[in-house]
Image (tube, rainbow, N blue to C red; front, top):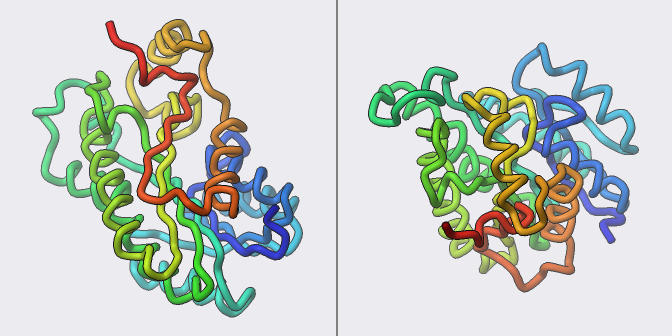
Length: 253
């Protein structure tokens, strides 16, 4: 399905990461990929995982430092010569902003969350577009807190709302170049980043009981959806937010 396709994966932290599930699904279908890491403490984990996929490279990238973003895409150009898809799975807000009341969010926490969790999608899309000369697909990761209030999700919900709006605007801008941009709104998952949200365990239990499928989604199910979105099987889909949450989002009171 993805034989000879080239991708870049943002956001792998460990083997339980959503980004890694996406990469694993794409790698199983023949894709070659570059993997980024944000901090030295993550480098070893990312290198170990990337080594299991033939033809991969690992590059540093901190989206708050434009020079590292530019260098990452230059490494992709030098190694592969082009780019076919991106999986963008980056989000961050200070821990203290993910508990208590949203109204207490500081200016610095708001700026940080929006820059890293939302603006970074536009940032990498701009850098990637010249390498997607034959078209491509960009997939980002959102969450239901972008649409409805989820307790303790706070400023991250606002950032995800901005991310989903950015998805639509980028899809409109890049569609003329046959570049598609979509978001996956995954249900709650027990990932490293999710543990920063206060009472995540209770949220997992509630969603698992309330969803139509009576369980929580798995990272592999999210990964398979990303595979679909970066492949030609989804060639007519762009600007969408696709829910992969065992149906939780359809439920009312």
